[in-house]
Length: 172
Image (cartoon, rainbow, N blue to C red):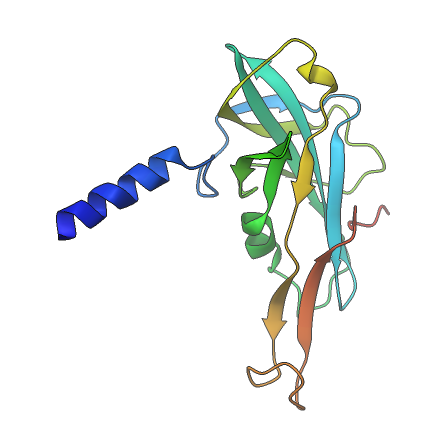
């Protein structure tokens, strides 16, 4: 019974999209027209994610960078790892990548074209014309820090929420 559970778990993990724990397999420059999104924290500040799709050996590479606002509340500091780990990249309604920890951190910018990005190779075939395909960046709304005694609405502390609102890392 135990070995069948482990076998099933391994099969599920192998069939999953790129895992959040994976490190960048390649480095590439983001292309003009990269998909850009991100979000903000309820205490101010935020982060931005930029993604380009590239072809490599007949498969799709997902390449990305992320930037963090220089001014963050102490309550949201260091919450970006969990936020990035929860995001996904979709193309044509199918999830290609879950987790953005493979992406390179960069300074906030008005344009991320030409930034050196961390990339992962997906199983999705690369088709001529894909260079014009826009990836959808999705990051779920989440509680980043809860100082309110564990229950939202309880007096006595702060709750910091991250919400996807579009690019959130402010440019200096």
